[in-house]
Length: 133
Length: 321
Image 1 (tube, rainbow over the protein chains, first blue to last red):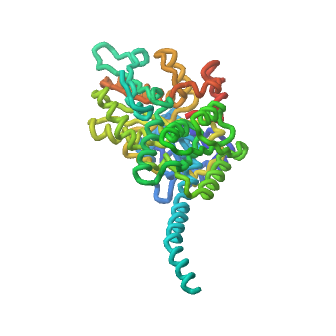
Image 2: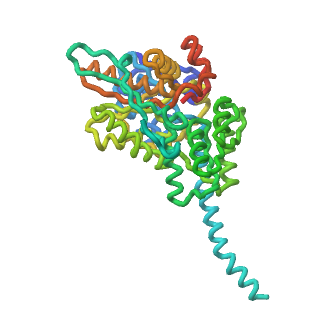
Image 3: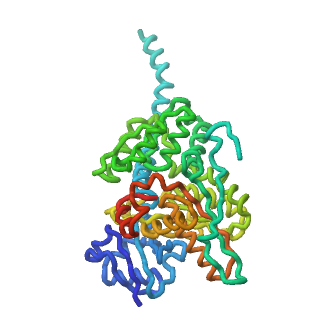
């Protein structure tokens, strides 16, 4: 029983550079175990220690996301095509920039809080400077 | 016919049209399976993003985050930028868009025409450079307002309050809703609304699968999922490759006369998949899908003519949805 598996560029170090490899299994979990026997380390990049699919990995069976087909328990049949992709759908640039900026929103909020606090303190500082004179 | 006080009021209320020639034929006596297209290209700037842009700006105004004359910053080379530029112009804000310098000339011309300012990041640096530029700009201008469509609840709410009710009003027998998965706003908002109102509704996502160049050496440990995304709203999620998206985009204009962009082709591909399943299972289906925008902005790709293989090559490395 052969299932075709498409490997993303970033994981081809585990497949000797191969874009497409073949494997077997009744479920996605079985298939990944089978692949790992020939491409050691591959499964650990896709499945967490807790035994779930890694959050930023998307796996598709015949173009359908396995998370809606039972995830690692998704049933496979001979001739199925499995595609593994990093989670960047909907515009890699937009996502990358948005992810960067979401981290910085916290920083920006901290800056504006700091400024507000400084503005609140400023008149008191000015008054005390006058009093000292 | 309808009359509006300004262009902003004319947002939404788009037509839902049947696709009698693209809908699959069912065996005699079997229940009907019908495809319906929601023509979002009929919005003020020609895309579904007008809804989100309008709601995000209004929400920021109501929250006191945006005051007249303020600057809005958004990293986008796409439809959201064009929609925000129009809304910003009419509501009195300045819009700055950050984008890689190799986006199509139509995008740059459209954004400038609508009044947006553009900050380019070096094309050679790819998305890493875009990240660096976006970080730098947001750090240098903490007073600029990022509406941040990927995490802004008003993006999804626009669809909960408008797209969803419009669909249910026009198609009370709806069984499937199919849309593209980008910021996830359309699917989250419309999907939540329809799930509350329609028993057994199927909410189906079509996600673009780009050429390998786009994914490049992207690290799996540093992936990104939009904050708006909630997988429990979806019933199914399809990944649609460039070739299928182009094929369906061409079919839509050849068979039904609807000239759309490639993201719509990807959505139609998923809509046809669920429609054909319904035929196979002998179930009734009214499948409504989103036409995100017209094809005008993508003509320069050359992917509307020639062979499918040529079109696939032309779109390799491009974010076509």
